[in-house]
Image: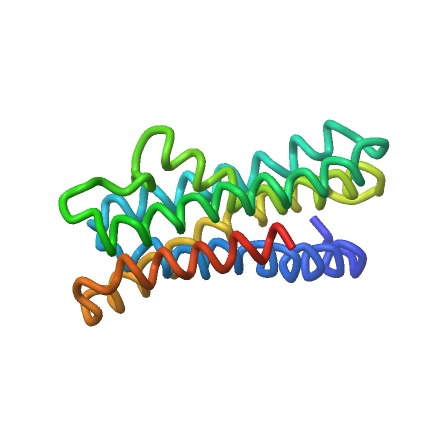
Length: 186
C-alpha cells in the first residue's frame, strides 16, 4: 500500500489539530490530577476523554455545515460553564468543605461531564471536516488517541505536583479549572 504525499500532509495536519485539541485535556488534567487519584482512575479518565475526543468530532461531521456557527458558540459556552462550576466547587471544597466531596467525580456523571466539557471544542472541528473531502476516520482516530494520551500525561503530572502542594492542591486545581472555564466562555 503506497502512502501518497497528500495522505502524509493530512496526517500531519490532523496530528497538529489533535495536539491543539488535546492541550485542553492536558492542562485541565493537571488541575484535576492535583486532587490526588490512583493510577487506575488516571487510566479511566484518560480513556473516557479519548473516547469523547473521538466521538465529538464524529458527531460534528454527522451534524453538517449549516449548524457549525451556532453550535460552535454554544459548545464554548456550555463547556466553559461546566468547567467554571467544577472549578468553583473545587475552590469551595478546598476552602470550606473539609470532608465534603467535590462535584468533580472520577466516575459516573461527573466523569462524563468533565470529558464532555473538555471535548466540546472538537465538535466544531468535526463540523468543518463534514464539509471537506478528508480522511475523517484518520482524523477522529488521531483526535481520540492524542486526547487520551495528553489527558493521561496531564493527570499524571498533576498527581505528582499535587503531592508537593498538600492541602492546597484542590485549591490550585479548582483555580485552574475556573480560569479555563472562564477563558472558554469569553
